[in-house]
Image (cartoon, rainbow, N blue to C red; front, top):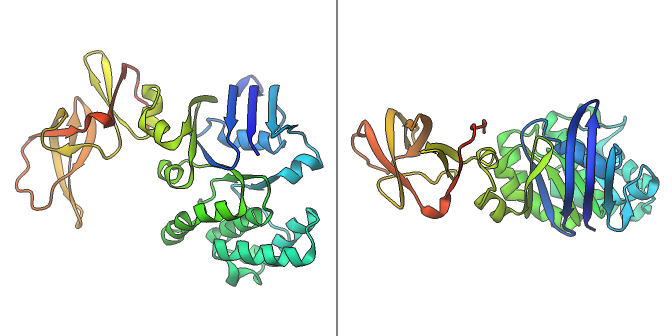
Length: 320
């Protein structure tokens, strides 16, 4: 089921949170909403679930207008950023969500078992939901949403609160779980790598406006402007009234297609690799040195492949 935003305007007081003339989230795909804090990402999820109403414009779920009614609730599964559980066990919380959707008892147990296994919480089903750690609660929260098998699944920062090993494991397992349990998925993440790993399509929101939308390779590979490139992790280097944007991890020591002079400030030995840190035209960058590299000169030639470099009119660089 696709999701469409048409002439959407949402305000809080006098502040415009979202201004989206047109956006379509494709049916059957996973779309990541990324952007700086305050860009309107979570608000967009709440509009899809009809937990907020736009001041102008519409949100359509397939052919239906998103409204605060049972029909909309039955179309959407929502895993909030902060998990909320009622009293009782994890199993009882998952079961309650399914009973509210009027899923038959036998099917409820099958769905709970499958979603629990996919999210790694089978051993937690009998535990009290209020006795979960932060990471365990986040995984239970995700399992509850997936068990609903709704036409539209909304995930707000699904990997937040997980320690590094649990996050790594779930990052590996979640795409398959979404294919098995969800149809159309919209997820919010502040992490660019998560968006690349989890989503097929990406929407970049900055200041409540869509700066880029489409397949992840196109969005990450060809940002439309310097501000979007900076958010996506590109290094912005001033160059004669223009900005040269270099893709993440594209800089390498030595000459190449697009060459820069790096003024080396320090060399860090990180055990598994050595990095040279310094500045190019006043912009701080780092490059990984090749194994066995001898002394590093004060001025190091570095380069990037031409396909990883974009040029834009000069603008103020934003933080990454």
